[in-house]
Length: 283
Image 1 (cartoon, helix red, strand yellow):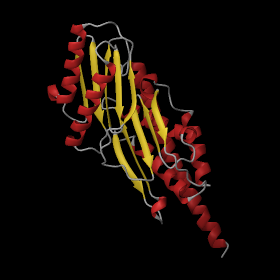
Image 2 (tube, rainbow, N blue to C red; image 1 turned 60 degrees about the vertical axis):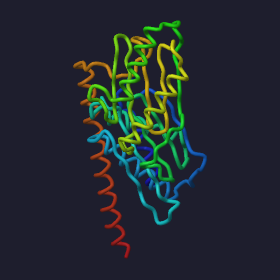
Image 3 (tube, one colour; image 1 turned 180 degrees about the horizontal axis):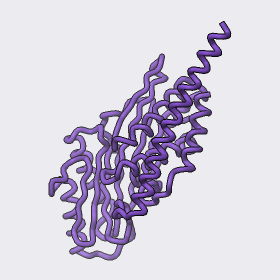
Image 4 (cartoon, rainbow, N blue to C red; image 1 turned 60 degrees about the horizontal axis):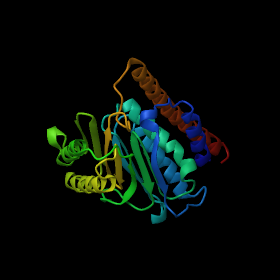
């Protein structure tokens, strides 16, 4: 019952998500090999976890949860993280969009991970929270525009500033630029600053080696961090400047999310009340 209601809620909810192609477009996704049994305690706990992630994204750009079960096989762990430059309405929209895709992407899989342009969501039955992961999960290099030593030097300078955190941007989210080249890097919020630095160093090293000197853009996503660069117009991934219409759409989406979450809470309270009333009459 809870599972079918959750599926209905996500389907209904997705109808109201306004399209923001710069934040909710697909980057990569994957699922674990192990499957769970339909209508099992694990499925119920997973639904609770995903609901908590969507709820939390309305007020925080990162959070992690675990839902305990009666046995160790029923425990589920999860987290989400939004890109560091997103507003809270856009963060909430992105996380809800990601969560709504798991039912088709990872149907009955015990673990799943999905990276959209604006956010990352992951869950599993094995704890991964606070564990550094430098496995390559996605890499992509743009076409070469020829060997331009000046452009290569600017790209390397941008990537170097991301790695060093120059300009006061030494946190989990970092941006940099030089003329027509922009770069962005981010670690998942469960890493320490030392682990983040180690992960980004590895991502940037691999990005340089994989994409060479002439690629007009490059993406390197590791398990817990990523580094990206782009020549202007080649590969847009950073958020666009706010415009009045975009801001208005985000606020409307944010309000819808809050309203739907409140509605779900009221339905659950009402159902619990009715069950107690009819349960009491049946005694």
